Length: 167
Image (cartoon, rainbow, N blue to C red):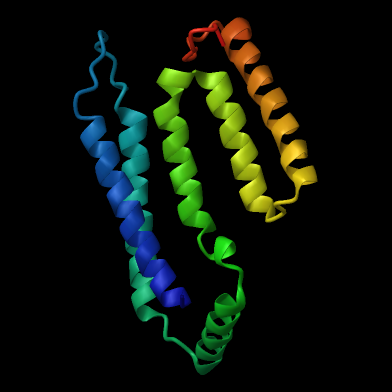
């Protein structure tokens, strides 16, 4: 993907995110008469995203695609064809894992969901699918999930989804 296309797509994503912020801050209310209301900072961020999106979009339109960039893109395309299939789909698989993590929070609980998610995500990103790496990432995932659970549940007294066993 050329720099030109990346900048134009980045601008569009920034605009979509800014619109999302405006929509979800429309119903924020506060019990104060303060000049700075709860929606102030999110909307300020949204306006900045729109401004930076405009700058990126204009820069993307003005940026010509050079011959050197075309050659690099062709080499990247060839290298991508030789890449293992799992590496080509890593971004999509990451989104699937995040979605499954979020969907499993309520029925399975945070600790189990987080341990499984972290194990799978670290294994996927490392690209090493040997038994040794699975065990290593499982230990890291379980320890991390338990630590996060205790820090937020006990330390900060936050409600975290738990399963029927209490974790």
